[in-house]
Image (cartoon, rainbow, N blue to C red):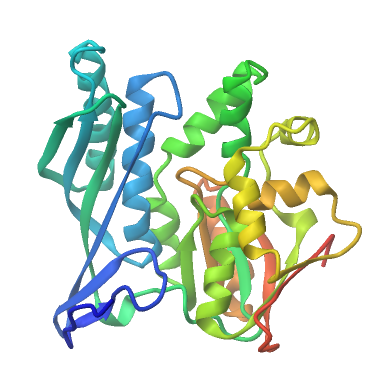
Length: 319
């Protein structure tokens, strides 16, 4: 399929990235993204918060600042009370206010299945733009949120999830990546993405393909929600994790000591996950300290970029 071209299109569909970027002038580019999905939690207000945080995340991953947003709604008006939709929208608006963005409109349709999300536009200086495609040898990788949201939501459906853990996961999914983006802006960041439906290894795979490098991950360093191991070990794995594994099976090489449950967690599709940041080696510890001091306490160094051009992800138990 031949796509329209424009010399001002900085990031389009030619390679996988988090959003599209269009150059306005030498000091301003706009970032455009859209995301919506069906409810993953029962509380409509939390659902609105999570869906909005998830949509806003692409702007932060590319080094930008969200400015405007438009609601996307599909609602079964004859099956659900309109008060549910009001709570969803209220949750989304709360996150927009927290992000400093404004709601400028939207579109709704009647549908048998409830869906909600946002189309978001952000600003970025072209020289501060971050993409997935610039991993550099010896960069270190930092992940800012724990993994396991897909496994927990699967456990909720099976009525096997601890209430405390469910609350922790909901709060994490509703948390903006705003603070992490503000902290990393002061450092020499080479590449960045946010972890969502393709899981950690799927999104890292996009970075590896786009950069022509390989990566070594340290499985024991990867942050995981407390209580995930027993649920993953008993098979509470979402179908999306198996699809993610199948798609990346030729790229990922696991050391024999990496347990199967942890492998599954690394393929687990995330909702509103953290940022995966590739930072210059000599700045990694300082960035990690600033993230933790800023309240992003699950942030961890989880791997390094290799010169190896084979475009593989080597997963070891530890460094």
